Length: 558
Image 1 (cartoon, rainbow, N blue to C red):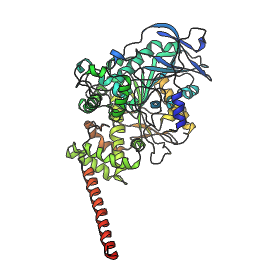
Image 2 (cartoon, rainbow, N blue to C red; image 1 turned 90 degrees about the vertical axis):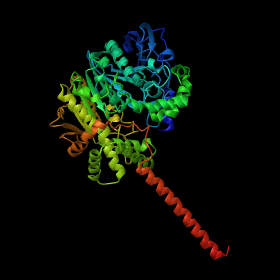
Image 3 (cartoon, rainbow, N blue to C red; image 1 turned 135 degrees about the vertical axis):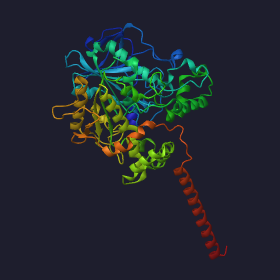
């Protein structure tokens, strides 16, 4: 991000105030907690910073969201609510917006020229590895989408992430009183959906026709919400971009983050944690942010095996689009500092995951690696494309279809122009929102014609449950034909994309390989070889220096 862009985001912050005088009734919406007055931009009305729950501060820290209280005050809805607590990060633009504990707000966009009643509603949950993101990110601005598709009401939602949204407090004294702490961000999303059910009609939206969609952590969220009983009936359709129920952790995988929190905070009890100020939490979070938890498979909110809920038909009442990008893992080249750190980090993760597998499954991976050309780094990246993203999406879709639900699958191949990124994680976002000037993932301005096609498919699905357009027939996905919309410069349907990879690696899904890296063991062959190589190199340099010294000494009679 440029300094100019960062400054623009920071300076966009202000607090919404009570309005005591006249206001434009055409830019207002009467909700359960007051009348909110939005701002007009062209033919679009946008309402920013509408609270959907009580601020989760004080005694409500690490507690489930509490419904917002009723009210009749007239209030501005001009400014985004704060981002949840997170560290600043170049690809997470909302991280440069003021952040804090009081972050449970949503934004709404509506087209003022469209008089359609009971408009379809699309609710977006941002990504960010469950540790970053927020509604202030200009990538998620809804103006262009709602300008192009005038009958859509678009909502974006803020929720707790990182240290306040996904942390297991059971190792702290008093932690038994905080059983929902590992999944609070999901509960925030559910509370937002309840609020939308009760209030979206004030904006012209149809509460019976709500589509939830998200990317990365947002894609994982909208995959989990259909299997959480308390979310039943709050939405009708799901679009999961590069996220599935695979983006979850076991209780054991969540413990390392808790241990690190205990060390950094020096707190032994939840009471001591509650005495930390917001500023202290922000500083601690800065030291822990790279170890964020994903939602915990706790058996309370998230099932121990989320796929089983799809197998049992618990999701049959929703329609679903789910898909992934062809080079998901290439996104992390930039996230971890370039190709050299990527080259040295991915083998460590790979060898950690490999060593816990039985010989039969190791042989499957060996066969997969042997089937491709190129550097082992890229082979490993394609392995994780499959295990963390594409195959879990297929598993989710095929069980959803087999047990009464309707599913549609896509595979995104349109590349970024940033060197080595290709069709990486998040590259589709600018297309989906029509925010083509947001080039943080695409590298350069995205193709408007393709963006219009993608927006048409996404919004057609929100309207009817079928994403086909006048020019493109999108067949539903099933476990036999496996129809997949390949989103290229010329979108088209293919059947059973990368069939050989699917058949070879599908049995490995039972190991629930995920992005957890907080407990990586660095005593693996790659590291040992690298260390030995470094020692050998150092010895070689030292030997060469000694030889040079001897030669110089001899020749110069020193």
